[in-house]
Image (cartoon, rainbow, N blue to C red; front, side, top):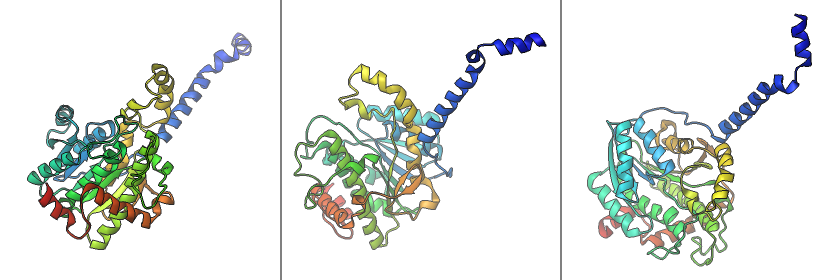
Amino acid sequence: MEEIKKALVEADPFASWWPFIVAGIVFVIGTVRTYMGGQPCPNGNTIPEQVIVVTGAAGGIGREVCRELARRQAGCLILACRTVEQGDALREQLRREAPDCTFEVLVIDLRSFDSVRRFVRQVQRDHPTVDALVNCAGVIFQPGGCTADGYEQHLQCNYLSHFLLTQLLRPQLARSQYGGRIVNVSAHGYTAAKIADREDPLNLRQSGQSGRDAFAHSKLAIVLGSRALAGKLTAEGSKTTVNCCTPGLVRGTGHLRHSPIMRALFAKVLTFPWMWLFMKSPTQGAHTIVRLVTDPELARCNGEFYNDCERVEVSELAKDDELADRLYRASLNAVGLTDGPGMATVRAESEL
């Protein structure tokens, strides 16, 4: 016994304490990852027979949204993808995981308003009713200048094309017995956006914007446009709702592939551990979107902004109702629509 006591006294402190140090480090890392991962979706209800459209379905977050909605027994998921190949690969994966769900692959190129209109025509042909629309697709640091329609790429891909899609599908959403839901995916970055001229809320006269600034503005436009649409839906007595959310900082989505920093291998190697520690996985990023689509408690929630599955306040600029109305009217003009009751139905029939 004395020999054991002597050995413990003379032992190297590090040799005896290192397991506790390692355990402490693991605990801290685990705590940080859990905290940064955000709150999981609090509801687990199923959504049988519902028809749901998801843009950006083949992307990291969109893919996980589709997987979870399929697990919740959605009746039909319309996978809006940029290419047939992307959509077919996703459909095969989803069929293996949820064989009882129906999956339809439809091509949509958000760089083209004509493509959006063709997409809507296909949806309307087969689905007189749509229960939810998830506008999840997006780009950042996108190269290549303006789109064929003449708009900055972030503005059109992230906002204007989704705005057009939403307006044209409003009649189908209005027919939903569950109360049609529109979920617009924004980002934390909207708070960095600036609108220098209130007469030009789409920043059409702002030349030479950086990719970062253009991205932030497009995400602010999503919040403002959703706020204006929510007010109009309420005024019309519609059961359709529209809400925004941010998925948070999410790794593994491919959004940073065009970032000038991430082009260097050294930068990728250097930032990977920090991204793994401080950013969400695509599955975690999908939780808030899934809640807004499925939670019965949010059936009447309209015009709100959600983060980590909870409602949060938006910035002062994003609360500006007059600016939101200006942007909404400018958006209608940009996509070739007019305001007024039944507008979406009329234009859908006459232009598609």
